[in-house]
Length: 156
Image (tube, rainbow, N blue to C red; front, side):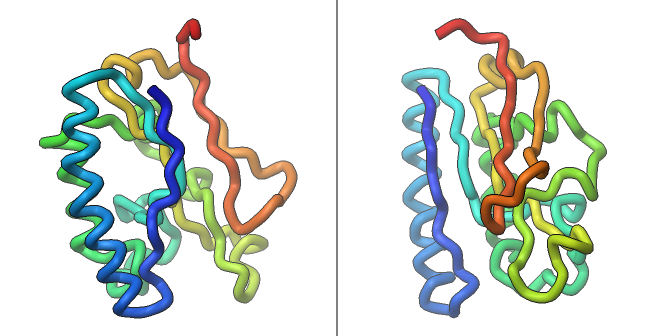
């Protein structure tokens, strides 16, 4: 199965952050139940930069939505106890400045590559093992996000 999802952002205030936490709390058991039934790839804007390498200014963003400890812990749980795989990180374990998929529209964030990796392919291990290549498309700027694609050795 292929899941395309846009996770809530909590950046507009505490009420939206609480809505994001409620979504994460409800979505995790859904993903775990689905994992028990079938293989899947979850693609989309997760609105969480999981690790320090996933955003340019991690020190100054530790108290900002998208890099809060609770959000990062949710991702860690999903990728450890939950058994899902961050496919981009499997293919590119050490990349930093080239991994970003989102830049603020403020200032010169895009021009200066002050970005965040918010867009993911998260997969069950069997499908993640079929990942061959990754690409973050930055040749043309469509929006504040850049598309991430993964090529899988998979016949549909």
